[in-house]
Length: 107
Image (cartoon, rainbow, N blue to C red; front, side, top):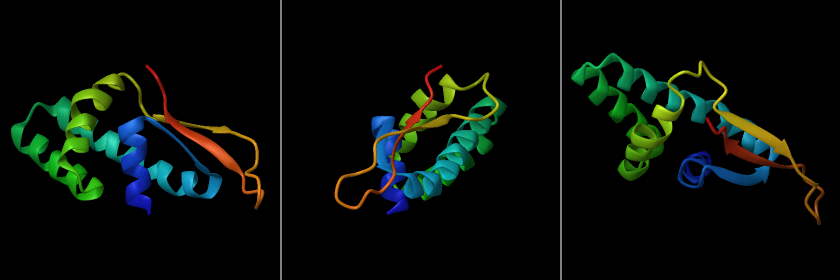
């Protein structure tokens, strides 16, 4: 479940989910983006390959890893962290679960 939520956030750059699920996934998404940033910045081919393999192992999808390295990580080169934001929404009808919008910050 966590992996599929991470994939959805990276693919769509925003998802609506419960607050508990968003909190569980948020830190892992931030780590993935940080790994990609560090792999790109060093310029060392060996470190870049290692970073790619780490991201692929955590996401389980090469196409999404490519998106992280080519589209998402360059966006946050000058940002030291805080790549995601959680916006509170109305509680879900039926079970009144707290809903949030988990999205990547634009920069």
